[in-house]
Each structure stands twice: as C-alpha cells, then as structure tokens.
Length: 250
Image 1 (cartoon, rainbow, N blue to C red):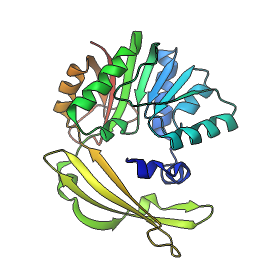
Image 2: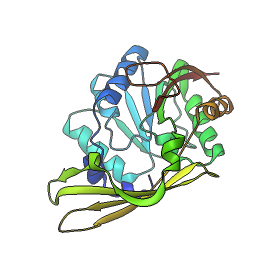
Image 3: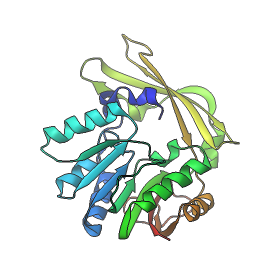
Image 4: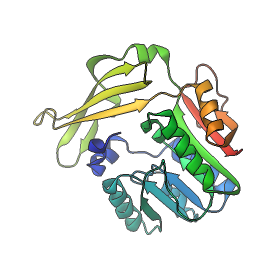
C-alpha cells in the first residue's frame, strides 16, 4: 500500500487484524529453522512479535515510521524485544546475516518494477546465513478476477470493522487492472454513517504470475525449494489462490 494507507497504523490493524494460519505458519517455520529472523515489510509486527515471543532474536524492517512506531508500542506492551529498523526493502545492509528472512502478507507486491523485485530478493539473499531460508507469500493471480476490475465501487463486507471511536466502519473499493504494468490500481473508501469517506486511500498491488516468479527468483540469486498453495502446506495447483514459497541461496 502507499504511504497514505500506512499513515494510520491503528486503523490498519483494525482493517487487517492478522493472526490465524499465516502467523501459525511463520512461527512454525521459525521454530524449525532456528536462529535469527529478519522480516521485510514488517508493518505493525503482527507476525514478527509472536515469533520473537517464542524466543527468536528478531529484526523488523519497514519503510513506514508510523507502522514501526505502532509495532514498537505493541511489542513493548507485550514485553517482547524486537529490533525495529526503518529502511527500503529493495536496498538495505544490516551488517549481519539471518537464518530466516520472511517477506509476508503480499509485501513483495508493493514493488511494481521487475528490477525492484530482483533488488529486494538479492538483498534478502545477501542477508542469509549458511543454510538460511527466504520465505514469502503472495497471492496467485486470477485472470477472471483481474478482468472484473472495472473501476466500479463495491462493498467489501468481509472487511467491515469496529473502530473504538468511530463505531462500525464500512469498506468499499474501486479497482482497475493495468495489464501492461500488471498492477491493480484501487481506491479504498472507509465510511461510517456519520462520516462518509472519512478516509480515501490508494492501493496499488502488482501481480506476479507463477512462471514469472521462477525467473525473478533466479535473477535474485534464489532457488525455489517448495511452493505451497495454502497455509497447511498443500500443493500449489492451478486453482491455488496463494503462492507460499520457501527458497534458499542459489
């Protein structure tokens, strides 16, 4: 998402409360891998704080000062130690290596240019300790859904949430798909009965198709070990909505 969406980290957490099978998967993988964990695009720490609470030394990197401030507040409130770093996931140097580098929650898809994706993957590879892994999840594009992005404003009932100050907040989204750039360009409208459109923010998300992903990984110096189609570790198929990838340095 763009900077406008990240400007209110608490609303972001209400809109995307996290938890569930994604957190369980990343925690389990951190336990299996052991050692130090780096998360790129860590946001407000919804996945990294539980991993740190399990006893792993953790570093979270994000470009948004607002999101990092909320992550630090949450970690402190839970008595969990995490190092938070503001930085660009395309180009960073932390001066150390990690046993696990994660890029969860479609964070890669905020990078629209192929060269930026490759730079990010190379930076992740360069921070791997021997035997380390890079793990990330992105959605698997549906041509049917992309074709249906016609610019019409539609309600997202599943994203309705309760704000402690504003009350019930409804979400409507208008999206178009740019086939040349492989980017879905959306505008998110957040409203209450008393405050229609109290927030109108952009969301632009790239699509990475399954065969394209293999080439990006190769250019990024990574080798795909496994690609799952769901959080339970089921196989990746033509019907999968998720690409959950486990990689090593090539």
